[in-house]
Each structure stands twice: as structure tokens, then as C-alpha cells.
Length: 267
Image 1 (spheres, one colour):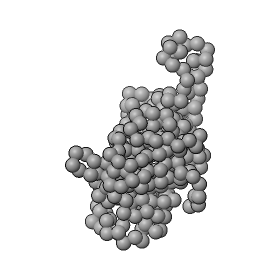
Image 2 (cartoon, one colour):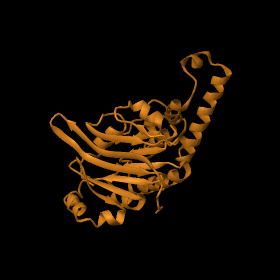
Image 3 (cartoon, rainbow, N blue to C red):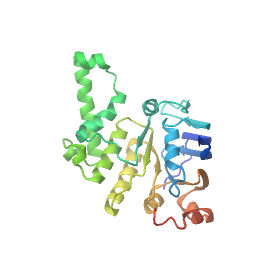
Image 4 (tube, one colour):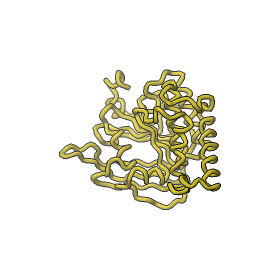
């Protein structure tokens, strides 16, 4: 595991989220540093997906601060920022339920991700000048390169709905990478995968982190994957962080062991 003394890329401070009278998140503090793989784990209903929704603009937290530090190093407060602006800032997310465009090819799905980084406006696309055509070709080339990185170049022209489940997961990650993120947010990427696919996914995330110099924050139920992939882990229960540390520290924490007793069937 890498040692990370580097600066934060995401800092969540004292964040709470209320839905009517229900407090879904309570005073959550989470930090992700440059180059880290950080896992967010906890029993079902602990508030993990709500947390992701709060830091990607789907919800605006009731209290607290969500601060991001993109590649330019300038602090950005992202509470209340719209989801497309969060993406443009450089935070890319995959979802628990795969959200690909089923009647588009694998290549087209990745190209959609690239479009938040292209300069040509609608007018340019209509007039199709040389500059527009050159940029479109660049989008195609870069998207194809990303498919190669996740081992899907042979199915570039297949409709995404026809791809096997594990390949759809990898395609979703390629599309997220197309936005050139500094932080990749993966919501249960190993869900529904067999052990071989999970192992390949783990190796892919490790490779992506190195190659793209990207930090990763993931929600995951597969404990074997979490323990072998993460630099640090945050454990949530009932909307609170109950433990944080390295995989070794967290797995020895009595509070974590208690929280997970009886959870094994869901994990």
C-alpha cells in the first residue's frame, strides 16, 4: 500500500443531511488525499449512497462543508453545486445501478463522457467547420483509447445493452474517466460480479489510479476487495462514521466487528 502524506482532494467537514424529521447523515468528516483509494463501508442503510449524493450535487447537505481541490489546487465549495458542474470540476461517479445509454455503442457511451471536456458549442457542431471535425475525431480517438484501457476495444461498436454485466461495469468506469477526473467515485462497482470479474476490477482500479493519477472513493460490500485495495477505510453506521483507519486497524476495531455481526448475509 502507498503511503500518502499528500494534500487533500476532497474534504467533507461536519456534514449532516436531514430528510424532513429524519437525520440520514450526522456530522460526517471524510477526507480523500491525492492518489489514495479510500473505501466507505457499512451495513445496508448506513447512509453511504446518501453521502455520495450529497457530494455530487444530487442533494444539498443540511449542514457542513463539502470542499474539493481540483488539479489546479484551488479550493471549491461544492455544497449546492449542480451535478453537471461537479462533473466538470473533475469528480466523476458511477452508480449502483448501471446507467449506460443502452441503445448507444460502447464507444458512443464513452464519447458522451468526453463531451464535458470539449470546446465546440452547438453552433460549431451544426456548422461543422474543420476545427469541429478535428475535435470530433479527437473525441473518437481518446474514447477508443479509454476502451483499450479497460479491455473493451473489441466491443467498441456493440450496443452497451448487449455487453455482459462485468463489461458494462468497466464501460461505466471508462465513461467516468473520459471526463478527466481528479476523483473517481465508485458506488458498489463489484455488485453482481463473480469472483473472477471482481479480481479483474480490483486490478483495473489499481492500474487506473497509477496511470491517470486519480484518487478513488468507493462504496463496496465485497470485503475481500475493500481490504486488499484500500489505503484507508471509513465505516458508517446509522449515518455516522464509527471508525476510520487502515484496513488492518479497521478490521480489528470492536465497533466495526459489532456493526457487521449479522450483516454477513447482505455483504
